[in-house]
Amino acid sequence: MKKLMTLLLMVTFITIVACSKSDSGTTNNGSGSGTGGTTLNCNTIDSRFAAVVFPIIQNNCNSVGCHATGSSNGPGALTNFDQIKAAAAQIRSSVESGTMPKNGALTTAQKNAISCWVASGALNN
Image (spheres, rainbow, N blue to C red):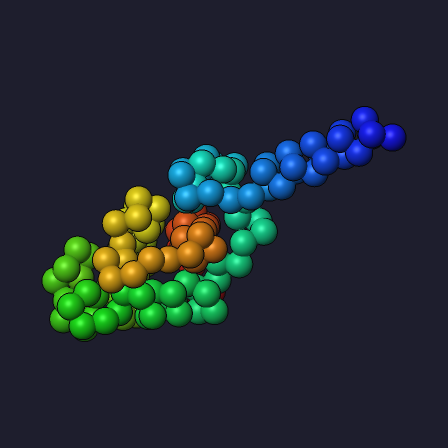
């Protein structure tokens, strides 16, 4: 009984560690890469532009001194779909490397959503 409990605890621990996400780098699972050293399965991540990605960018990037209207920082203003799509690869790279946003930090879920949106073709969905 004691051996069974030990085995069960070990399996539970390994499962938790294997399923957790990290910010140390990701590998491509065929759906795109992302942040962290784990595989990013974009099939399970909501990365719709209008519902998920655009609000992240509005709340974290589209501010005075960063990427608001008239900005010349990096890719310039990020206030609408066309501007954001044109800068999609640069946004993804900056988010994955952790260099953006400068005035705060994105959660792993937010970084993954942006990475998956870009990997899926940066659609206006």
